[in-house]
Picture 1 (cartoon, rainbow, N blue to C red):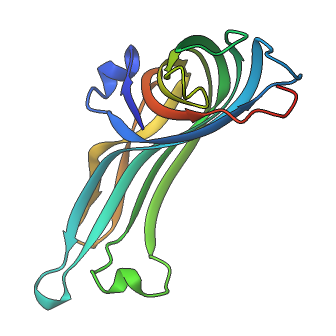
Picture 2: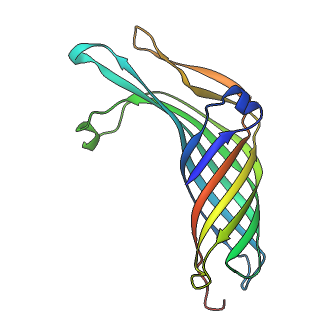
Picture 3: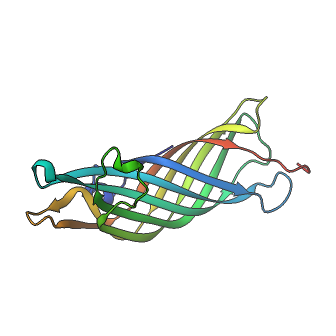
Length: 205
């Protein structure tokens, strides 16, 4: 699980931009044994807002649903202890991209959602920015279960100027046209992750 909040100029521009979602990643050791260095990659999906607009009235009415989300994709280098104990701190240096995604589509009904058809997207805004950062974490596990750990991780990501759509800045006019109002700021953020980490050891370990 992951939670993100804006930082610095991003927080001043968009203080309500709190995303909650999920993360999946992996690491590998570039050499056998208990090496202190690992390399890895991870991907997250962090929705930070949903808004709906009714179009029309009566029996012909339908809704437009806009979903705002962040999609961070990062590679990283990890420095960690050579051997695992009950408490294992580590540090990461990350570099990658974040995709700011806003998408408006016609909201499907309860039964239409199960039909084999693609949702109609009426408007979208995607912007990809490069970013980098540092992470500090601790893996906690019992002495008798060294292959599974609870992992609490704190990340700071530094990002440049970006254009994004804030929640509430989507309008639908009387002609049923959807309009996005763009905001501009740097996009630095803080991320907190709560993860379950599993360790797969090779026979030589």
